[in-house]
Image (cartoon, rainbow, N blue to C red; front, side):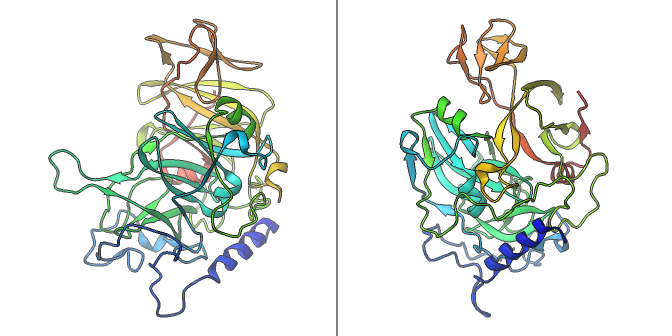
Length: 394
């Protein structure tokens, strides 16, 4: 067994040691979490195929315990933040998850996310969940509101999301505390439980290095290490996990042989429009123009981020790349882009843009490109959820 798998197994076993005693209710959240009430409906955590629940959208026999019980990996609720200018504990290449909503700019350091996986909060007046699955190296954010559509009978719920301890396609399976429905992170849809078939609206998130995020948003806010939990923030329990020669953890299907399982890709689209762009670990920026279901998309690749799944010290992880995906339009015009020494530039105005799709110099300074939903993840995870995906060979 590879050393990375042994270390990971020991970590997950330590989480499993936090399991409730036999006969106790594993659905009860940790005592320090203040959450909305459970709605007293059948729980998909207890039995995802219960006769009193809608028919699951997946084969529930493929829901695999990753080791920890529900809340064994504690999601964060009502978290603490620090002003970016006051943060002195992050090193330049460390990865952060960048989320901006209605002028509210937040950074979620992966050194914290790797231990908690989900943060429930309100960002720019939007109830949001920011999520990270280390086993798939995938970061996604969601609007936590579901239901309440005009003319519908379903009441609006604001969900509190937790870590179920289950895996599907080696991906984090979330559960909501209101109905205990199950939500694979990459799919963003309830696959079992009362809310089966309900989809969460995606919120754009970019994985990038701390230094560039701080330069872009010096007045932003950063998730604090003051979480109320005792964790070795700055260290990763997933040392060596992104070794290209290693196997995915508890992945129960054959991997798609078109690329090595742990090739990093940018995933775009869905179903018959799905596209995977291999992200080469290069010292140079790159621009890839693709068509996603008839919509032109510009994908930007920028090296300089430390992998959180390599060295024990995250800041010392080998260099990988940040990516961004955007509709190439601003100020009422279509744009074409190329990589330059200090970022990206459009050929129409010569403006300079950063990896967040923000124009920082030139005639279009202050403009922002419309973000396109994309997932940075491993090939095995992307193709498991989008088996008809095409590979963009550039």
